[in-house]
Length: 267
Figure 1 (cartoon, rainbow, N blue to C red):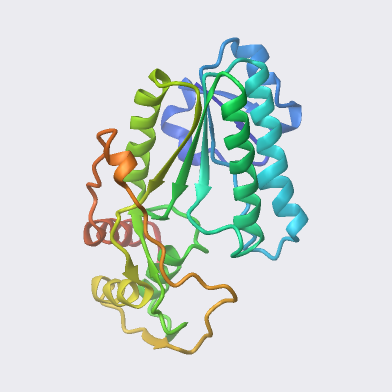
Figure 2 (figure 1 turned 180 degrees about the vertical axis):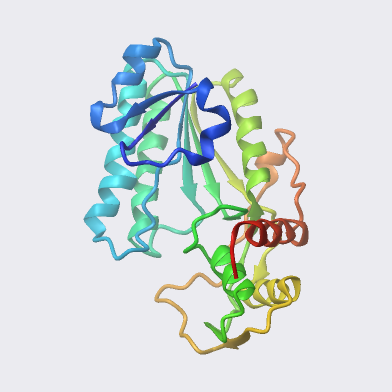
């Protein structure tokens, strides 16, 4: 197994399997892993820039479209069997992030039909789990509640999201890796989620009960974002047809997050 990363990328999450991984830096060129490892069967692309730190649109385009497109062409040149892309469930018009992600998907749709390989597009819903990005909504809410911040300013919270626990996402990838290589070359797309949407308000209120927080939830204190998506829900029929099962229910997943944060943080 090999990974391609930035020189500055932390590897703490891979500490338990570090001795089983060959590590390459993007700065040394995209061809290096193929030159050293020889035949590579599958490339799994998960690099992303969400634009949460005020990045300009051209920066998102560079990370989310141009870089993976170069990696995709490198994979095609080296006769890779399958390219698995982590896409967003957001529609392309929502923001620069979603547009840049969908632009790569369209390239995958085109190239998967022109060359002898499989482009797998994973449309990921609202992933959550321990150790996630602290700016993502589930992590931010749970951490704020555990810290008993005086108040949490929120939108009205009517928008619904399909929350899917990280272990279920990983199991979806496992099934894809095991089944798709036997299929014809081309473009394949799978939506990954629970299939059951929940409002942001309901999620936050559940989190408050689980944490026993004294934080005041001020729904309606913030306006909805421009182009806010009011309903996002995965159609999981395609991935279920491969044998995938959604196992971690929301209450269980949220409890795991709360327990993890309690063990890691000093409040």
